[in-house]
Image (cartoon, rainbow, N blue to C red; front, side, top):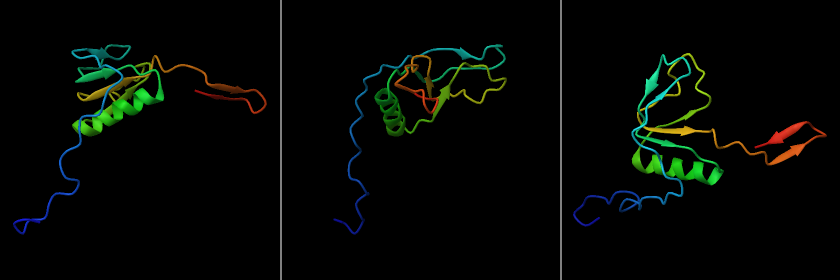
Amino acid sequence: MASGVPEQLGGPPPPTPAMRLPGLRDMHIHNWARTYSCRPAVVFDPTTEDEIRDVLAQARYHSARVRVLGAAHSPSDIAFTSDFLIRLDGFNRLLTVRWVVMSVSM
């Protein structure tokens, strides 16, 4: 507190988080019926939990909202955004199958 003004909490801004997953820019996304569409700032196609964490860290750093798009079958624009969009098409691996309790982990 040099001049009677308290320092901001946290000090200088943190460095930009490292990205292991490049995002796609300038994409036009639409639902299956083509009744709704959007142009997100960045579209990500993660295949691992770490990549999803990276996207969320980037979004937090840039104060961007994140929406997750599934099969785009919704008859509304609920999953569309102008910020960050995550598509889960590549996030489709089975990790464990437990036949006794009939459960699957992805």
